[in-house]
Length: 93
Length: 370
Image 1 (cartoon, chains in turn cyan, red):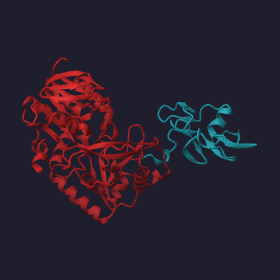
Image 2: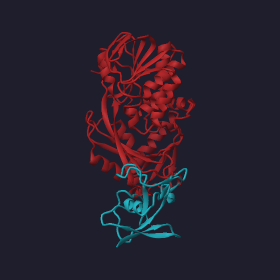
Image 3: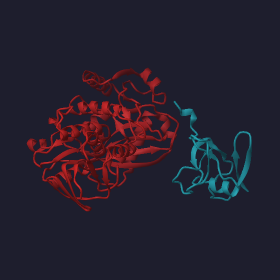
Image 4: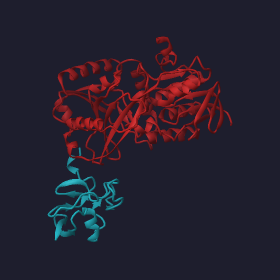
């Protein structure tokens, strides 16, 4: 069974996926609807367009922020973390 | 249709500014556009209001007037930001040329502050350390150009007709796909199509398209504080080359995206995307701001700068066509120069001595040059 790890540093769950499935599809199938919060209001976001256009479903994959969950193919052992805002607070000046 | 004092052809930023200042002077204004409000070059740039990229001369005088007028405008709803510009020199030649330009600009009233590499690192912490020196231009501003156009039109109270094609321009009358419009003055603010309108009026001006691309990153926290560009930008802006020229211009927006320009090509109205141009722009931006290598691009867009062979806009009444007054050909500086242009047009129409001598911008200067 293929799984990747999803969650923050405290709570993590293993998410099953089929070969070739996107991270977003696997998260939806596992009952997760949001995995990002908006930059200003902190509102919940997940899949919106589902085809890579809207950049609403971005998530941190193996330490890289801004990955579109709808387009990123899940790989066994991936570490997927929810993204707060732009996910690049360390760059702020 | 009912007559107006002033009929403005073009609902881009320049047309909107003409409408705004004419209405402010008490004139009744109607605005036409073949497409939508801010649907042409206005929506295809970055919204710059710059003095930094102007050589001393008529365009800098115009830019300084425009800068003052933008500062006096109520920037509400326009995302007007007094962010300042920073120009950097990455090799000894460009750094020296930049310092010379800045000194000449200072003599003409530009606030241009020489900054060392160490000071650049404080002003822009994400900037590459591979810079020799720079100049800080606190007067440079940015505005969201579509919002600014809409605001100026709304505040003018002008009647606006979109999706209206101009078919003929006669003295004090314009025939369109939606009927005839009469006015004492017809303002040609048709931007990159200004040459067509001038041709219809029998008073040709040579305005040609100069294509540019802009790359848009994913939204980020504030990562770039100023408009930052390399010193070769000024040389490219003033160049007459037909082939591709790129310089790198990087700046943030209120929405969090970072905009990356600037390419210049004379390829007519060719709207095809050019991956090689986009790749060059991206690579040069990464040179200047290394963190961009890890950032995603959301999209890119392109537009056509309306340029004249001498790189000056065409502003003023046309002696060849009674009642016709031009306000076009601003190349890549139309957003910034719009306020001054609108003010000068309104002053000319109302018979007030203009704030600037319009001689360098006169529409019939090209005929004389031949």
